[in-house]
Length: 411
Ligand code: ADP
Ligand code: MG
Ligand code: ZN
Image 1 (cartoon, rainbow, N blue to C red):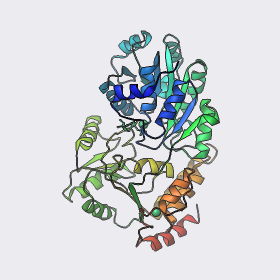
Image 2: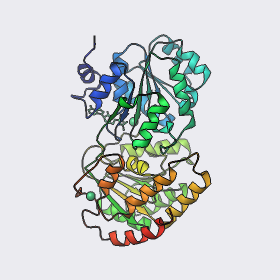
Image 3: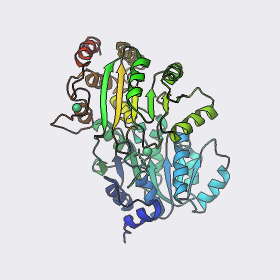
Image 4: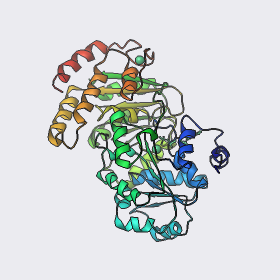
């Protein structure tokens, strides 16, 4: 007998309806079918396991790559009355959590892949009743993905020890190749994949060569009220930009892994609460941050890949209102990326070269950016979008194409 999830959605979360493919994913999970859900950032992936976790008997074990991400999710789950806990090095109540887990008093247990893959944890799992394995940010399992984490590879043997427990892998950013690899690495059948549309029509994409970064970004800020994120490539650059952009009169903060953890947490909290703050951050910032009203994302340098670009720009405009994503790049970004690829060499990172070339095509094009972006995720668009710099008549387009061609010939 299957229970209709909709009344549970309304009761637990207070949402009137499922969004996009959520209903399909939840149905598969409740039916015990192994699933990979590929949904863009902000589409509501967490709900796809949180809701089943309250409907099914036992605990859903959620593997998540970042402690900060887990704690955000924990707060959100507890806020709607879901019984959840994290088991990380910074949690002082680990013994209590383990007792609750064994006693069947948890809907969700969040854990990092490093801990999940230990024999100790496997032993613990055998002492509790499990409802589901949820693997968040599942692209981390693939060397083709943009954020490979070797410990994700140990999850399949762990899950294999519990063959009756369902599996749900979730990711926002996977090209066809990475998706197939995720399924293979996590023991999910290829037809167990649910892919939702990737377009974010309210985001306007613009890409220009870099001249004077802080001046170029200050110009964006002048036109663009509301909160914004500026991604810079180094810790020093985030601090310099925060200082320079502060002179526009907007409140600014820096965010990077080298800051005192308390300062970092405070800067993040200030940003989340603010209606006009600009946060200058390394890419460490943003995963799992739920701030719907971000009005612009600016990249002061080339992102790591199209997937990373899509994920980082995807933090703009989650509320559906117009938002801007502006990328500034320079020839030296490509030179540095090529050098990095040369150093790691292709055997361990087979996708790196292809990824850089795809990024080159995106910055080089004089055509519709969105078409290229969506094509990368397997969606073929016939029409131009009308909401990117090239569709709107980018004055820099010719220049950019020339410069890009020169430096891309060597990719
Ligand atoms: P993702 O992990 O896919 O980036 P999240 O799970 O963090 O997205 O969800 C993004 C936001 O969407 C959250 O604020 C969440 O509460 C909201 N959300 C999820 N599902 C629904 C829904 N069916 N109706 C309304 N809001 C939803
Ligand atoms: Mg998420
Ligand atoms: Zn376009």
